[in-house]
Image (cartoon, rainbow, N blue to C red; front, side):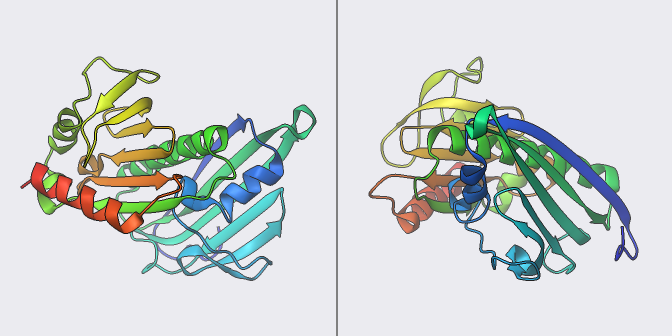
Length: 247
């Protein structure tokens, strides 16, 4: 890989199918990313600006999107980061096959960094599929909340699950009522592991990141598709909840 300099190169590949047309997948990757990742802005041309100070190296809607970042200050732990998406139609264009390739150069412990990125990638792509299956085309307000330093403790994510009142034996697909800021949430567990929890309601995707396993504070992400979505209120409410939990 050119431009690698010092460090250790890596590549991870994921492939999946989803009930969405290539155009719908393309919109989710570009203009609709607040519904599953965070708001992203691409300049729609090869050579245009990409998120995190990157550059669009391939822009072929709705089938190919590649962006590259060569700025270590923009991507901690890497000197180079590239994400490539290939989207092909299936079932007469009603479904899509997606190939996601992330590559780059790590500057630290390659095995530990690869493990962290791989786990986060799988959860993010799962959330993309949840968005495309249940909320595609709906505008979203995204909120991201980081817990206090104490939430980096080894047992922090276990404490979060208990604070949500998630039953220990509740697995993916289970309907639950969880404690949250304000009123309880009636939700479906769409993802659950020792590292991440995903909850889906009629109008939201709640994402919980056990980044304490990687030496970082726990974080919460909320993708709100409701007509009355208020990102600032959501951030303040969850920040207070996290501060009290780990205070």
